[in-house]
Image (cartoon, rainbow over all chains, first blue to last red; front, side):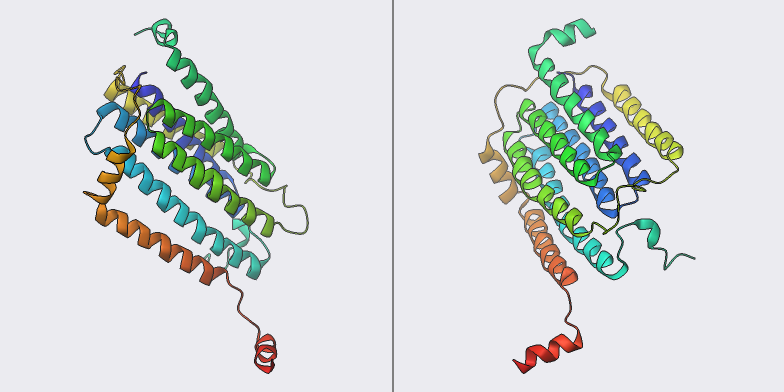
Length: 101
Length: 183
């Protein structure tokens, strides 16, 4: 296996995440795109770990940290979305223009 | 290294199969017109990623991904989708009308990153496949050198959970509070 096949796959996934982040209007779908980008980073970390073979499995440790922080992000993000939906009856970012100049 | 050399390795067939699944599902996550379908396609993308981790001999992380993401995070997402679904059709107007500029930007991001990695690593091979990384090594690393980040990340998770409950909890209206105290 070539290292680059994983890196390019990760880059493609990350680019898709960027596209979704910019195009989507629904907040839940934006969070889904963020998950896609975090996943791309995980692929890179694991591929580099397999490439370099560190004595302490550093890449895998960092991937576990990324997964943990992503779980925390989803939890708090969806709580905020729930609160916004309850107050504004919409989960659409275009409707949240109260603080826009 | 030519493409014929590359494709003759059986492990690359699996990479191609799982990689294409990941790419297709990832593409559908950002283009699907139905919110629930987008979340379910993310399951496919994550399952393909877990399979790739198995190819890269990272077994523990692969199963953590399956348990935490597919088991918990996706359920949370589906829960969020069900709750925030507006009474009238939300499925139209899911995307912004301006699609050309984001597509151009993400293509530029992809080209830049792919060029950088090809420039840096060329056709360097991953040699250490076959035997899985010992979970013991991961555990010793997590509770040895990385014990402080490990504790911090645990604390972050706890704070996020408490914060999520506090934010999402519905405050009682004054009338309801009166009703409660009357009982």
